[in-house]
Length: 385
Ligand SMILES: Cc1cc2nc3c(=O)[nH]c(=O)nc-3n(C[C@H](O)[C@H](O)[C@H](O)COP(=O)(O)OP(=O)(O)OC[C@H]3O[C@@H](n4cnc5c(N)ncnc54)[C@H](O)[C@@H]3O)c2cc1C
Image (cartoon, rainbow, N blue to C red; front, side, top):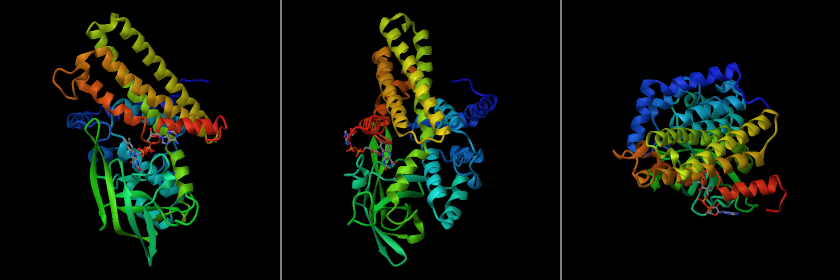
C-alpha cells in the first residue's frame, strides 16, 4: 500500500492549510480558545467562510453541491482542519444532516434546505439521544402523532451539540408504538424556534455546552418528515455510515497536541526524563496506528464496502488513544499541566488540562467505546451480542 499523498491530494492539503493559517481565521480560533471551549464552539463567520469553499456540502451528491472528494480526500480535509483546531462541530452536523436530506428527503425538502445549508445560512443538529435512550437508541420514547397536515411532538432530547445555535434539528421520534422498537421510528426536520420547543443548556466538563430540548405539543408539518414514515431506523443506520471521514479528525487533534507537547518538553529540558521518553514514544506509535486504521478504512470504503467493524475499530482506538495521551501529557508536565486553559503560567496555554477534561467525551459521543466493541464483536467475530 502506498501511503504517499498524490499531487492532487497535496494541493488539497495546501489549500486547506492556507485557509487554516489565514490571519483572520486564526484570530477567530484564538478568540474561541480564549472563550474556553475551542472544540465544540461555533463561529458563524468561519462557518460561512467554510461554506464559500464548498466544504459544508463536500460529501453530498454533486448535484447538491458535493465536491466529489474521495474518502482519502475527505480524511485530508478533516485531518487538516482538526490539526489547526478549526471549530468543526457545526460543519460536521450540518454536513451529516444535509447528506440525510440529499439521500432520503423529498424534492421539496431538498429545495428548502440544501442550498441554504450549503451557503452556511442554516445550522443543523441531531436530536437522537433521550434521558433513557442513548446507546440503546431504539428505545426512544419521544412521540410524533399525526394530526391533519401536522405531527404533534412530545418528549425530551438531551446532549444535543450546538442545539443552542442550530436552526433545525433532525429529530428521531416514535410514530408507531405498537410494532417492534426499530420499526416505528420516523425522522423530522424540526425548527428549534417553533412553539412548544424549549432549549435548555447542559454544561459539560471542560466548560462546554450541550443541550436539552423539551417538546410539548410542538407541531411539525408533514412535509418536514425525512424519508418514509416508520422507516427512520434504516435512515439513521445508513446516516451513521455517511460521516466516517470525520473519524480521522480525532487522531489529527492528537498529532497537534503531540507536536506542541514535544516542543514544550524539549524547550523545558524534560526530554531526558525516562517517563517522558516512554510516554512520548507511546503517543507517537498510537497516533501512527490510528492513521493506519483510518487509511485501511478509507481503502475499504473506496472499494465500495460498508466496513462496520473497521469504522468501529478506528473510532475506538483513536478516541482511547487521545484519552491516554491526555493523561500522559498532564503526567509529563507535572503540576503546571493542571493549570486551566488560558491561565497565564500554564504550559501550552492550559490546553493539556482542557484536553484531560474533554477527552473522555470523545470516547462517548457518536457511540461509546463499549458499543464500538459490541459492533466489532458482532461484525468481525459474529459473536451473539
Ligand atoms: C460530547 C457529546 C456530544 C453529544 N452530542 C450529541 C448530539 O448532538 N445529539 C445526540 O442525539 N446525542 C449526542 N450525544 C449523546 C451520545 O450519543 C450518547 O451519550 C451516547 O450514545 C451514550 O448514551 P448515554 O449517554 O445515554 O449512555 P448510556 O447508553 O446510558 O451508557 C452508559 C454506559 O453504559 C455503557 N453501555 C450501554 N449499553 C451497553 C451495552 N449494551 N454493553 C456494554 N456497555 C454498555 C456505555 O458504553 C456507557 O459507558 C453526545 C454525547 C457527548 C458526550
